[in-house]
Image (cartoon, rainbow, N blue to C red; front, side, top):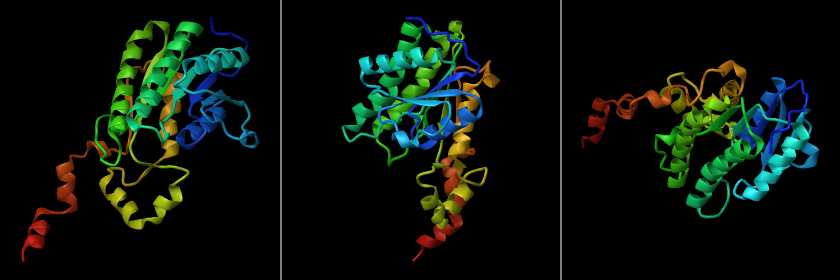
Length: 263
């Protein structure tokens, strides 16, 4: 099946997982930038919340190939060819975390891209995948599957950047560190000690915001990044550049640590 090329004045973007968090902000930003936005999610928002102009929602399970193909067919028939695709989906289920993370992040992303290329002849489009600094760093409070999935996404980006480049398809990723989300912003900011710690350890001296993550995504999804592909843009205020031992020495100077251990 070839992508429908209906006459249109606005570019068409697909946001996968665009009903909450940074994904929802990306939808708003893309609309503000002049896009028509199609949102693909397992559970679309209630009808009363669909107030954004030029936004339509489709329901599909990324782990179900038939469901995904059907939704993409409906999107193509209703709104035409895609210019940009942004992946924000994350495993939030209650089933075994390893398989859930791999299925949602890796298999789902691969399936959607392969369907768009194979069935809809996707060309001249920008694909942006939201990964994480945990693709290369370890956070002990997050499961193994999360780390492996994010590392796999970065390799998917590099693979498809090479494999699909001749089609004019650019593929990049954005890897956020800790950032303030709409859902938890007030709780985090109310913890003054935590905020002060972030201000001290992050080179830019503050916590990032979801808006700053979506700024990076929408930049890579636009023609402003027309000669960038296969890259991972880290959005963490420079924190991942800091050597952990140097950070420990700064927070607890050796002389202070030595004195505190004396009886």
